[in-house]
Image 1: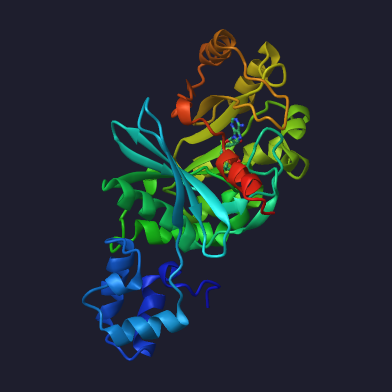
Image 2 (image 1 turned 30 degrees about the vertical axis):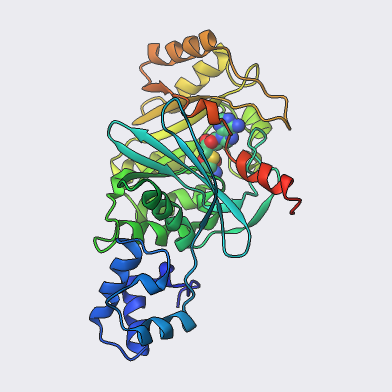
Length: 349
Ligand code: SAH
């Protein structure tokens, strides 16, 4: 039996069991799943055609947990929205809506906090509070779809947290999200970003071959990577690249590497050459991200002209590369800063 008992984390099969236990007919499971994951009800009592006794019975055994909006910021430049959500136990998470020509994309958090300790990241400064349940990940998407009244077509798991440190919940979340009885989002429209938990990359390639994988690389050699990301002490760059190669071979899909440019740390000519060498021959794409400075650390952003030069050095070596367009500059809050700011203001933790 799975570790999640709350209503919105249940699969159709588990929901069927729960419905039978409540003395109802099997078909109710699909009906209820539709209310939860397609019509996106915010309270169980909104499930209009489900008998009240059945709803009450389910509520006793399977609590209805989701997220509640606490704050919302809207960019006047490009319509990007940042949401701060509260979980049922008072923990906070943040999510972002990005509006593109090809559709609405939501960036969700996978954990309240993070224990990976990346030096430049605000999400990890307070450590890990707890893992999110599948429902709590889904509900960030559902709450935003309800808030804007438009369909969400893409999901990126790139908010606070390390998704592969909460693998089972992530995996189930993907299954529920792609269910035709729910939002029916295509596997290919989901991207999961990891700092590089190597064994999980292998597992993910086998279990979710259609989902896009992004690896936060941020360095071209072990030494620099260790300086920026403690996870590099656990897995070497060679082990990480072997896993990346396995993903590409196994799934026949292009992998993305994220590379946050930090002035004077990882943005030199030597690093560009090393990076090109590292990914040589691999079906991949490098996404350069100008680092978003956080006040707790003195890392600086690489200058725009230097970013362009770094990009050209990679392109000259036939590497596919893009520079991430900054969205919602006027509501700028680097990963984890909303949550951290709120926690500090309210004197929690
Ligand atoms: N834990 C996962 C997903 C969350 S972080 C991961 O590491 O991939 C999402 C991306 O934002 C990662 O590439 C992360 O390294 C990057 N990131 C975090 N803080 C940043 C900052 N201040 N500036 C630029 N990129 C940052």
